[in-house]
Amino acid sequence: MKKIIVISSGKGGVGKTTTSINLSAAINFFGGEVLLIDGNLSTPNVGILLNSPEVPINLNHVLSNKADITEAVYEHESGMKIIPSSLSVKELGKVKPQKLKDFKEDFKELADYIIVDSAAGLGAEAKATLELADELILVTNPEIAAIADALKTIKLAEKLKKPVRGVIVTRVKKNKIEMQPEIVKDMLEAPILGMIPEDLSVQEALKERDAVIHTHPKSKAARAYKEIAAKLIGQEYEHKLDVEDKHSSFQKALKLFGLSGK
Image 1 (cartoon, helix red, strand yellow):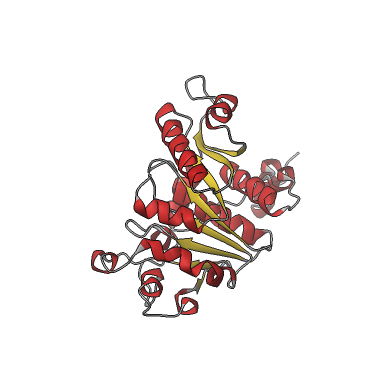
Image 2 (tube, one colour; image 1 turned 90 degrees about the vertical axis):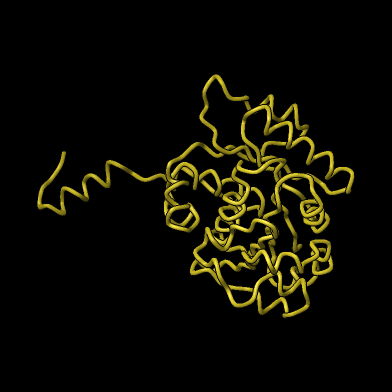
């Protein structure tokens, strides 16, 4: 069954857009037909982070009835589909976020899995994106302020009768200071879909303007996103098979220089 999954957060800066991009890339990795929509109309970043900041036709044109929805779809080199939003402040003033839900069935004609990067917070734009959702995934950090804001988003989702699929906790350092998964789960009363470790590979991928799934496919963060995506689409994934064999890599390097290792 085709499904629209909105990725939301109670506050900005917790890794919502990075998660939207990498979940989409991971679903595509498993062969799922995926469409990533930048529903963050006021501060869109999907296009920027996937190296396509300016496109001729975008979501704003569709919502303003200036273009057909199929004209706003672009294909990433990996094969996943993307609908970016406009970076123009002038264009933003012409768009009504509430119109997003009017295109719900049109979006579902384009892919099996539709991932929507929502605006952060609880404002009208974020609410409009939530109204589009079949289900919601919350992104948060393991700190009390982010958890408190995520809880507010969950309450809004409940008010809108939108089911919460679960929570993804990002930038996990696994130290004694941050909140533990069990506490996060109890506070939010929602299942933890996965924990994304603090990983320099994510920052390197952002610099390269691509998903960490593509730039560092065997990194800890990439494997964590793949595990979550596999759960979402019912795909088996054994992350142990996706771990780089450093010993093997060292042996290959020795052979390259005409040497042999024991």
